[in-house]
Structures are given as C-alpha cells and as structure tokens.
Image (tube, rainbow, N blue to C red; front, side):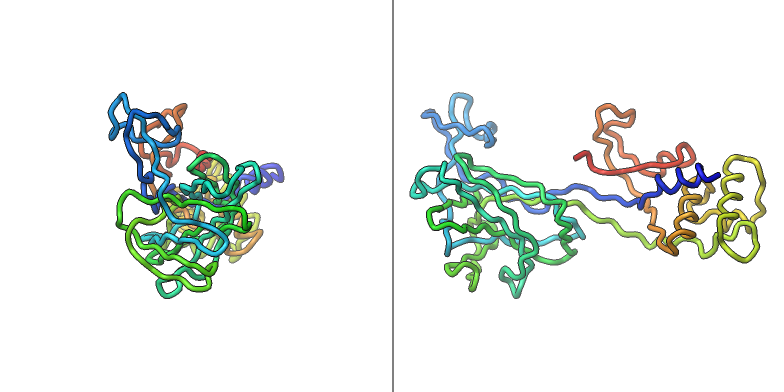
Length: 313
C-alpha cells in the first residue's frame, strides 16, 4: 500500500488549462516592393509583392537612445500570463560598428493614468544586423488582468547605441514618447513601434470539492478512506449512496483514481485541492490519434486515470 500511495502522491498535479494567444500584434513594419534587392528572411510580404520583386523593409521609425524612447499601449480582454514578445528594431547607422555590443532593454509596464507606469518586467536583448527580435518570458510569472491596459517599451543603456523602432503599417495605435528616459510621457495615436505580444489565457472555474471524504463513515477523513476508495476503484468492494457521494471528491460523477489523488492531498496538505475545469483545446501533436481535433478531460472520462494538458514548448 505504501508503494501505491507514493505513486499517487508523485502523479498528483494541479490541473488547469491555458491557451496561447496573440494579445497584441501590429503586424510587420512598413515595406516596399521593388526589383533592386534587399530581401529580408524574417519578413513576409509574398502576397503583396510580385514574384520578381523583393520585399524591403523601410528604415523609418522612432529613434531610441539613452533619453528618447517609445511605448506601445495594449489592452487585454481576458486574464493572461505573459509568454513572449517580438519587436522590430534596427541598429541606427550612427551607432557605427555592430560588433561593439549593442543591447536594448524591453520593459512591460502597467498603466498609470493612460501612461506607462510601474515596470512589471525587463529583459535584455542583443541587437545585431537584423530587424526582428523575440524572446520567451513565460518564466517571469507576469499576469495581465482582464480589462486592464499595459505598455511595452524599449530602452538603451549605452551612449554609443542608437536604434530605430520601425513604424507600423497602420496608424491605428496608441503610443507614448519620452525625452527624459521615462520621467514624463506624451501620449499620441498613429504609427507606433511594430511589435507583437503573446500570452496564455488563464481559465477559472467555480468548482468546489466535496465537503467530506469520509468514505468509511467513521466521522473522519484519513488513510483508511483512501484504502476504501482504492478498493472500490479496483472493484473489490461496493459502496452505498452516501459512500459514493463522499468518495466522488472532485464531483465529476465518477469515482476513480483522481478522487484518490484529491483525498491524499487533503490528508497531507489540508484543503488545497485545485479545480478540475471542463475545457476543449485543439490537439496540435502530429503524432496523436486526436491530431487536429478539439479534446478535453471529458474526451477521456473513465478511460484513463490521469491526463495532462499543456503547451508543447
């Protein structure tokens, strides 16, 4: 029995669901189609340019140096966990040799009276001869709240570095500029700095576990109740209606190993059971039998004893 309980503890995991989303995307920066060359591998405009033309990014944008910078505003309509960002930055010709070691600090701000406020996270990226820079930041544990606005900005630490934050194609964005390294901001609308932000949506549920896991009806919940539930799952004992109600601790209308896990957690850690919501997500694993289908816990109800849903990387 110790081996069984140890195995249950090891596989005990809080189950929740998140869905990766693009929460802010200005699209690619301004470009031109011509036959003179200058193609850029990370830039896609095949649908706009003719087959014999090159797609060339226009080096137009906002100057980013030690004092001057820009911040794009974005608003979220769900609760999210920040995952990644991408920005279109180019090394200004006045910066000279790109081998000097040019870096930019990308910051995510809360909103403060329609201006960039508290810095929630900051990341350094190395700037070379490219135009597009992206970074995974999901390990920073930055939550974005439903209905709230935020800002993404770029900053320079060295006096020999100047960058160009390339313009967006459409003049539809709210942005703020500063000439004193963020002490004061002026808010405008129009062509902002081209960028994108990814996050994972956080789902909540009003699910609550059963109030009692007293399966043997002796007035307390302990390891003896776990033993009884295991025996019931294995088909070795029968339960009356009250015992089944108490054994179905996660209230999913079936008694299985998931209830055993929840009861073990209750005994070991107190009432810390996490909700097990119903959800449906697309299976993006090409090797899966369910590839391309929308699946969730209900898909596998009573078929397996443990399931895990998470991102692929």
